Length: 162
Image 1: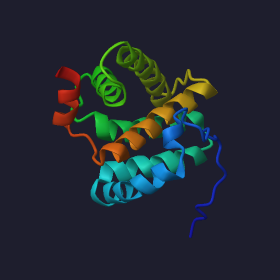
Image 2: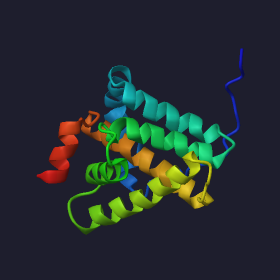
Image 3: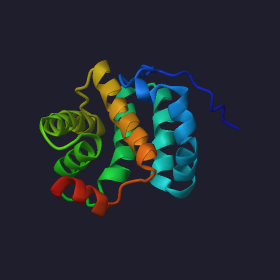
């Protein structure tokens, strides 16, 4: 049997920058939603497992590809024009309409480009890029727990176009 205990090769800061997400009350208020999502939504379960296990991959390019695999499972229901679709839908899910959403979308496009380079054997990322990519996955997981649902294609289109 393989020993699954492995050293973490990257440590994600405990702070989200949002004190309301760092209190024990948030955990108590949202624990049941997280358990229900994990039991009923395979893509949410995959995102949680990826968030935990990818930190143990000793190669940062492989980490980035793994994290984007989890994000694509949720935010890429269509395979056409992946960069725009994933970046726009993820930004719409994480940020309110306006300048913050546009800024988030541009950040996601840049990080997705680093994923593509890593996936095709030409990594161009730095250590901070791995952390930023983890942060995207973490905030998506937190938002799904908060909303008590994994967004569907229709949900994401409503966020984008309404």
